[in-house]
Image (tube, rainbow, N blue to C red; front, side, top):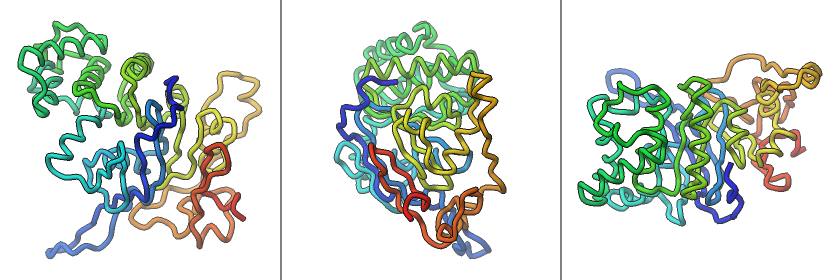
Length: 331
């Protein structure tokens, strides 16, 4: 976890972020509906901190990361990065901004081009942004391989010659190539063995310390997120339902969905574990094409009330930066 995560200098500010994907039908390809992958997000992230974004598969976590980086152009909302609204930036200006923002992808097998050598993969961002001469790029690639714990002589090898953990280190080196200040880590360890996961997490923490990086760390493993994050946002069906300081969220989850998620995390103490009550959620996650009216969680919530079905709760701060969107506290 970063030590400078609370310098309070805002790097990223998201307001009303929406990302809808249209659904077309028929010969004339008429638009019939939208997949509401991200449905109105508001949060900010400070320089040097790690914000963990958690939730079950399909809730819109990865889409949020890509919409922030403008890999997807948001349907609505603003993304302020270092004071610039990225949603209005285009072409060459956006390309220049991209030097500050990079991404580490989930699948180390799919995210590296099998026909390119490791040297070419890592130096590609340097070429795209016209950084350095050819010998300088070569030296930079060797230096990056050393930084991520790989042998600099691997420069002419191909991705298939490496294990999953080594490939993810190559992905990390590629993300670092242009000296970014902000990195979206899109479930960077979920495809790796448990023994390797800790190594990659430790590497990310060391790099953050060394280069003053800011991470948006997307994951569904709550114990990993607790280890690396300063603050944690819990996402459900396109919306953030709770956002709080790491320890505050684990000790005092307020939203019923966050409570259910945390009840499933095992505790390495048999006495405490035996006394704990698992919260089992009924039913399936509704479709993002037609989310429930009111609170999105109302169809599965064990504490649901009449108002939850009709009105959407406000995402409100209940002190010390603990934000929750729930009618239980807004009555």
